[in-house]
Amino acid sequence: MKPLAGERGADTASLDGANAGLPLRAVFWSVALAALGYLGLSLWAGWRAVVAAVVLVGPWVLLGLLALSLANYLLRFVRWGRYLALLDAPVAWRINLNAYFAGFALTTSPGKLGETLRSVLLKPHGVPPAASLAAFFAERASDLLSVLALAAIGLWAYPPARPVVGLALAFVALALLAVQWTALIAAIDRWALARPQKWARLVVKLCEIVLHFRRCFSLPAMGMGLALGLLAWLAEGVGFWWLLAALGHPLPLTTAVFIYAFAMLIGGLSFLPGGLGSSEAVMIGLLALHGFPEPAAVTATLICRLATLWFAVALGAFFLGRQKP
Image (cartoon, rainbow, N blue to C red; front, side, top):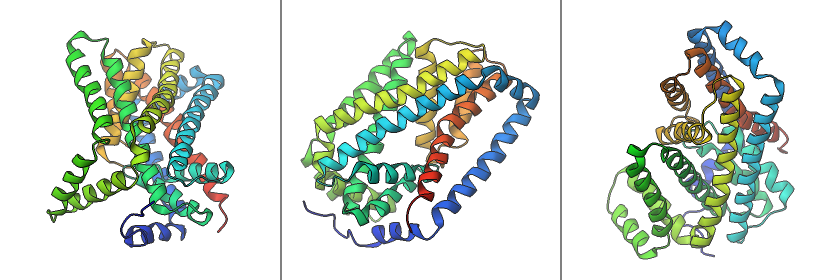
């Protein structure tokens, strides 16, 4: 398999530098900033009402939410392992699991780019950095399409929004087909090469990844990734629906999944670290539009994010701490 040009260049070197204690410091600062933000949200909504709502939910619902989030992570791990196998870079599942979950420690980085730490952790086990980077980008593409599809399905309940649903699902289908068209990818690559802007260099790199690792972006592989992604993100959407019912403000499953998926989509597209701020604002706003009192909307958002995003970060920090220096 032909490696990416400059595989041992600046991109890989920058990944190697991540082993110098930076990941844990990044986790600390992201947790500290999030804690301040969540404290501010609680005070704004009325901390007594927030605490009362948390007590109302109870420990069993909270454990159920964590279990559904864990199901999300494990389904995505299965997808990750399949991508590496397609790229002729299989690795023992225990080693792969440790590296995959350790990457969650940096999931609050913009675009989750910090999760490329897995490339550093898997390199000593014979996984070329270019292959793990290709698997990473295939994961991000599958996640984007999966969350977009879930949001579109939720919108189907609103007849005026159905044209938007049709466009969104058409986009998913076209995206799956476009990555099969190597002549188109090569043309985009040549077009971007002729431009000096930084974004053009990113487009060139993405085109190189798709062209060099077409097996990871084949229709069967992307179909597999989309199916596992839908199941993974639906699990967390179901958890959000369960949480709303436990708070005494039930919504239809399709509506709850739409609110969750749309908030995740906006958070991802905002390119803010972990979607912090943007996902929370969208979730609170949509819940308020559905008649939720402010304390209930804030509480549902805080618990949801703690049981999904921050549970992943906590697991990642644990697995990262287990990595041998």
